[in-house]
Image (cartoon, rainbow, N blue to C red):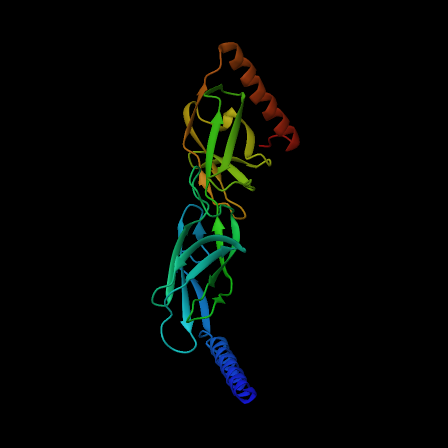
Length: 270
């Protein structure tokens, strides 16, 4: 009876050891069943690389390559802008493509809307067959479009001063443009003024720089930093003839200015 119990106990221990060995082998096999390493590269479309204007669509292609041969299929690629998630795309045939509108127009949802340089990266998630990988950063430079509006008095008397105001606003990008605005009468430059930090440039001119009658004035923002140039539409200003009494004062003003000029130059010599 005791011998039978011993034999039975030995068999039980043998079965237990065999079961543990099988479990250990299965665990070891699962541990060794690692996926194939991958490399992820990111390419912006050649048309927009480092020149994507605000409001334009930029396409990115993430290529996931298997280091063990074969084509990577399955998993997803996450696209990030300076580390912030902006979108995802499934991997098929070794690639994942996504498009993003940089600094979209107002009232349009954008993944990001800041002008300047952006570091875009692509992170491949991996799956049961392939390991995850991340691309190096690709720099995309976004320039903000602007709009310029010119305002002034609709009419002025010859000899009076005329105030010109240009308002330069970013289109859907936020921020504050800097730089200079030039004011023109047709193709004739009237003067230049700098933006004041609140998107406004102002210039006061002598109306004698203009012609009698209707003049078509414009304001041209030169662009600066990451903001692009823009030009206003025409602003009509009418220069009127002064009243007779004003004519006398105007002529006197011209005479006084001429006399002062002659004094400075030593007078007119024959």
